[in-house]
Image (cartoon, rainbow, N blue to C red; front, side, top):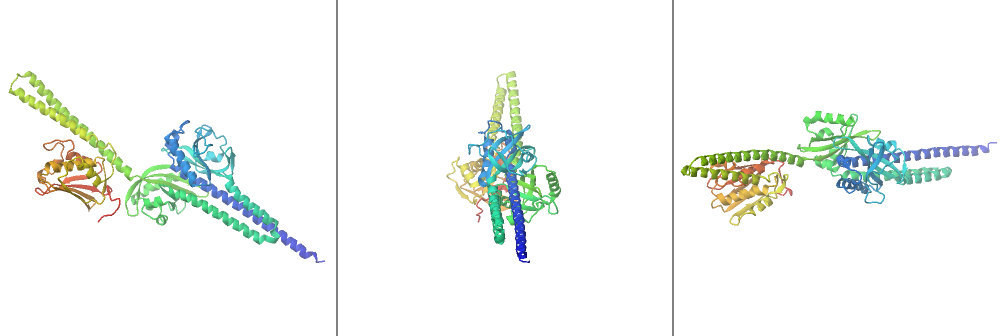
Length: 565
C-alpha cells in the first residue's frame, strides 16, 4: 500500500531538486550574461570617452573627402590605432559624423593598416538609436548589431571642438564572439548539469560557480587592460564623484595626475577636487562643477596647487560621464606653465619692439629734419667757414641715422624664437667663441645650471665678454658662478680689470652710452634678459674689477641633474 510512497517522494524530491537546480542554473546563466554584457558596455563607453577626450575636435571637423593623406587625418587615425593596439579585445575603433540625416565614417583606425578600412565619407546606413545617442553623450548598444563588418557590441562618445560643440563621435566595437564564446561555454555546462542534476547537482553547482569565477577573472583581466590604457596616458586624468555627499571626491587618478600634483597615487585618492585648487578658488570651482552637472563640456585654463603649495596653471578638459546608474566627472589636464611663460615673454617682446620702432623712428626723423635744415642753410649762404660748419653738422646727422639703423639691425632678432631652457655654461662658451678670449683665464662653477631666457642668451655673454676685452684694462681673469638667494638665483659675471666708476653704473645700460655706439651694447643685454623677468646690474668695485649680477627669479632656473655641492 505504501510501497510506492518512497518512490513518489523520491520522484517528487528529484523533480524538486531538478526544478530548483534548473531555476538556479537559469538564474545564474541570465545573471552572468547580464553582468558580462554590462561590464563590456561600461568598458566600451570608458574607452570611447577617453579616446574622444584625446582627439582635437577642430582638426577632426576640418577633414573632408580625399584628406586621407593629410597630417590631421594621419594623427587622429594613429591615436585611434594605438588605443586598439593597447586593447586586443577591441575589433574596430573609428570616428563618425552626421551630415544631415545620414551618418558617415570620417576616420577609421584600420585605414592604411587593414584592407577593409573605410574612407572619409563612407555612409553607414545602419545607424541605430544608441549610435545616434552617442552624439549627445556616452552610450552603448543594448544588443549586438550586425553589418557588413560582422556582429559587434559597440560603445560611443561625442567629440567636441574648442567651442564645445559636438562635431562627431568615437565608436569602439567588440566582436560578439569574444562574449558569446564565454556565454556558450557556460550554457553548455549548465545544460549538461541539468541532465544529470539528480546525480551531480552539487557537482554541477560547483562547476558552474567555478566557471563564473573564471569569467570574473577574465573580466578583471580586461579591466587591467583598460587600466593600463588609463595609466599610460601622458596627460593627467582624474575621475570624480558627481553626486551625493561625496561630490568632488577623487575616485580614480592615473600616475600622471598624481605626479603633476606632487602626490603618490594612494595620496591623491584620499583627496577631493577642492584640495587641488587654491583656497581662494572655491567659488570659481563651484561654478565649474555646476556647469558640468548641466552637461556642459568644458575646456578652460585654471590654477591648481601642488602638495608643496606651489600654484601652477593648467589646461583642463572636463565633461560629465553618465554610466547609467551613476554619474562621474572626467577631467583631463595638462600643465601649461611653459606655455604661459612663453606667452608672457612674447608680450614683453611686442612691447619692446614697439618701443624700439618708436624711438628709432624719432631718432631718424630728428636727424633727417636737422640734415634738411642744414642743406637749406647751405644753399642760402656763400661758400665760407659757416658752410663748412653746416657740412660738419650734416655729417653728424648722417652718423646718427647710420647708428640708429645699426641699432635696429642688432635688435631685429629679439624675440624671433620663443624663450627656452638653456644651459648657461654652453651659452657662455658659444658667446666667447666669437672673440679672441685666449689671454683671459676663466673660472666657471655652474653645476649644469639652466635658465629660461630668450634665444639671444648667447649674445648676452658675447657682450659681457667683449666689454672685458675693450674696457677691462689689464683684466686677466673672468669668473662665472652663482648663488641661491631669496626669491631666486644670482648669476655673477666678474673680471679683475679696472672696474666701473660708481657714477656710471646705471648709465652703461642706457642706449647709445659710450664712445662706441655698437649694436650689441649693454642696453640690449638688459632688454634680452628682461623678456623672461631676469634683471642685471653692475656691482663691482672701482680698481678691483667689474661685476655684473644677473638675478633669475624662482621658476626661471633649474638644475636638471640636481647634483650641486
